[in-house]
Length: 65
Image 1: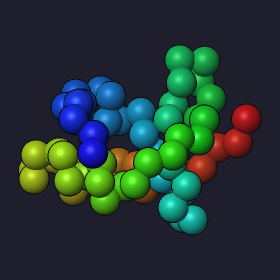
Image 2: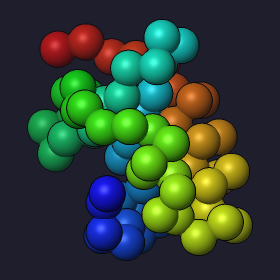
Image 3: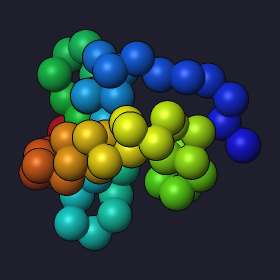
Image 4: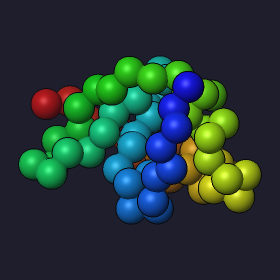
């Protein structure tokens, strides 16, 4: 289980596409795939942050290198 608490800025860097692929926006502007269980990740967030996290990441289209 993940144990780190993430800031709003860090949460805004994660993306989920329509197929459930998860990516992280890197400093070079590219979204790179990352592998983790979304349900596990959101379970560690404060309840008031889960909805905003999911809304933020699902608003972005998946980007390929």
